[in-house]
Structures are given as C-alpha cells and as structure tokens.
Image 1 (cartoon, helix red, strand yellow):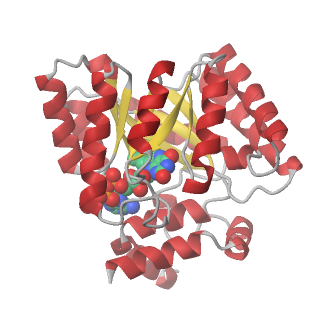
Image 2: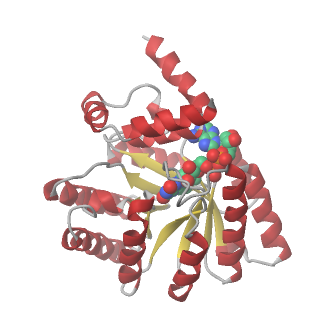
Length: 304
Ligand code: FDA
C-alpha cells in the first residue's frame, strides 16, 4: 500500500498543469509546514529563527520544469538575490539549487552562464553553494558540470545512495576533494539504475558515508533516519573524525525536535529551507516519502 502511495505522489509531483495552478494559488494544503514562504523576506525570517536555535541553513529557491531561457535567467537572478540577502542580513546559510532550474535541459551555454554568474556572486559574498541532485537522467550531466565548475570555484553536490552508480561516482569525484551531501534519493527510478529495496539503499548509504569520510572529504549526512544517524555517530567516534569534517542535514519541517537534539548534543546541524511560489513538486516528493503526511492535506481541505 505504502509503495502505491509513494508512486502516486511521485507521479503527481511531475504534473505540469498542477505545478502551474499551485503557483497561481499560493501555499496551500499544509505546504507551509515544509516551505518557508513565497518570498526571500519570509524565508530570511525563518532562517533567523533557526539560527537563533543554533541551526545552520541551506536555502533553496524552488523551481521546477523551467523550459525557457527567460525563466532560467530569472531563477539565477533569484539565487543571486538569496546570496545577497544571506550576506546582507548575516544569516548562517548556504545556498542549494537545481541545475534544471538554471537551464540544464535548455543548453549547456545557458546553464553554464547562469551557474558562473551565481558562483561569482557566491565567491564575492563568501556563500557556499551545493548543486542538488535530480533524477537519474540528469545525474551524469550534473556531475560533469560540477567537476567543470569545481576547477574554478568551491562548491558541493549530492550523491544518492539508491543509485547503483554512486560508489563509482564517489571514487571518481575523490580527486576533486569535494564537500558532498549524501542522501537516500527522492525520485522515481527504474530498478535497472536504483536499488528497489530500502534495505539495500540504507546499506549503500552507510558504505558511502564510510568511503567519503575515510577519503578525508567533508561529508554532510542528510537524513531523518535514526539508524543512519546513529551509524554516523558511532563511525566518527571510532575513527576519530573531527567534528569540523562532517555535519547532519535535515529538511525544514521534518523532525524539528530531532534537529534541536542533535544541535544540543554538539553536532553541526543544517536545515534545508525551501521557499518560493513553485512549491508543488517539492511538497509532493515530501508526501511520497511519508504518506502519513497526506493526513494534513485532508485536514487542511476541511479547515476554513
Ligand atoms: P527515510 O525516508 O527512510 O525516513 C526515515 C524517517 O524519517 C522516517 O521513518 C520518518 O520518521 C522520517 N521522515 C522521512 N521523510 C519524512 C517526511 N517527508 N515527513 C515526515 N517524516 C519523514 N534527494 C535527492 O534526490 N536529491 C537531493 O539533492 C536531495 N537533497 C536533500 C537535502 C537534505 C538536507 C535532505 C535531508 C534530503 C535531501 N533529499 C534529496 C531527499 C532524500 O533523498 C530523501 O528522499 C529524504 O531525506 C527521506 O529519506 P530519509 O533519509 O530521511 O530516510
């Protein structure tokens, strides 16, 4: 049953018509639990509150299905505005972004030009940028562009534990000394490219954490899963990994008590804070991860 729910929400997350309708009608159906607002001003307020609780942030201006140059350039401008706000308001925040929203599906030239503009602003203001990882079809291209940009700028990207290719990617990337966020993976993928069973993804996740930490590279363990968190705590203790070589990351609105606990225990804890009008696809992926969250939707439908 859970499998069907998951596929249902992932299917809905790709619906262009619903994506556009959601942009027009604003944050609805309990989405504000996971999305920090529609404007950078609202997001900055949320970041300040998190920073006061000793939680660092990575901010993401939401955007899906960008299919023209004007929109891709506008997305890049919004990311630059976010960088300037982080610097101007002295927020403890990095920036995360998706290459498809910068024009990855349009042309190499558009995505490269937009990324270079963003990376120049990030360098000028000292804001670290992470390129999120999207679906398998874009994984190779994302890593190629990451490597290209890494020659000139300090930036990070994401490796997904559900993909068979990930341990090989981690080895290939090692020469670049990358700061990587390790995650389970959030998209609907074929069993030809991704582990269909959660158990295998979890085992691969642990293997990737070990590999990346043992290689001496900065590791962000991005999960809400206590088993993986406990594994990481044990591994860093046994292998004397210094506390400034890794961090935990979680999504805004998911397990906030656990986020606070980890920060109180002295671990660096970073919260991924999305904002913007294009909240629909992100929200559907969060529901797919935990169909129990769909109960909110039903409740909010009946709320006046
Ligand atoms: P898992 O799904 O096994 O959940 C473990 C437990 O966490 C659950 O039992 C539940 O208690 C809680 N939980 C998980 N999801 C929840 C939810 N939606 N609502 C309420 N509780 C929930 N993916 C990707 O493909 N590309 C990317 O770039 C990123 N980036 C990213 C950044 C950060 C900071 C995080 C935390 C995650 C991502 N992800 C991602 C998403 C990631 O791939 C994955 O889909 C989610 O983190 C859920 O997997 P967990 O590791 O939390 O474990």
